[in-house]
Figure 1 (cartoon, rainbow, N blue to C red):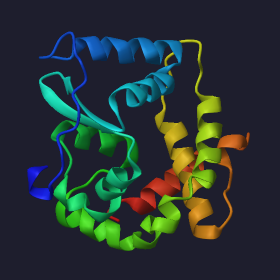
Figure 2: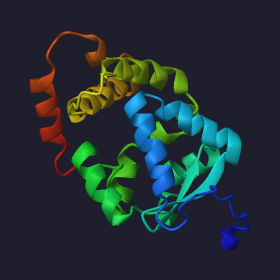
Figure 3: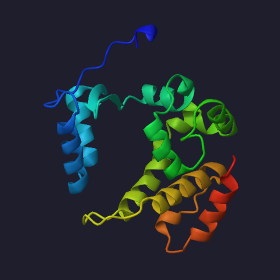
Figure 4: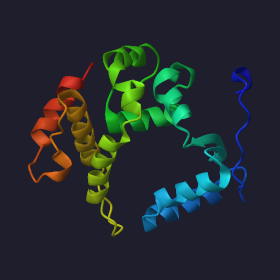
Length: 192
């Protein structure tokens, strides 16, 4: 941060400053009650658009600042990298693509989709919010455990089809079973 003349972000006032179990419990409860987004919003209102926390002996920087998000996801990604734990989780969710790889593989994947990271597209949350709303509508709120991977695949299909073709296939709002198509879509992405 000093290298880029950035101030240190404020620190979340942990009751457990080493492991951050208090914040972990807050998030766990928020997930269980369906208040995770409101909890995060409240944290950003109380501690600023960017703040630091502790989570299981690791320092985590949380941000709602669009410029920092843009730098992390697009313009300065090579300065951040993926933590080994996050990389494994990301690959299980998203496969071997721009979201889950580092280094030269990221550079190659990023070059293939560069135009989708233009400022015009980053700022266009209206299109994305429609798909996220449909996604959230399908997530049960009764405490049942579900496999989110098929829903994430449909979310990616909807946002990608709208980006590429100007119109979404709306798999999240359809009763049509897209599994065969999604399997073929995942197959052609191997090695991309």
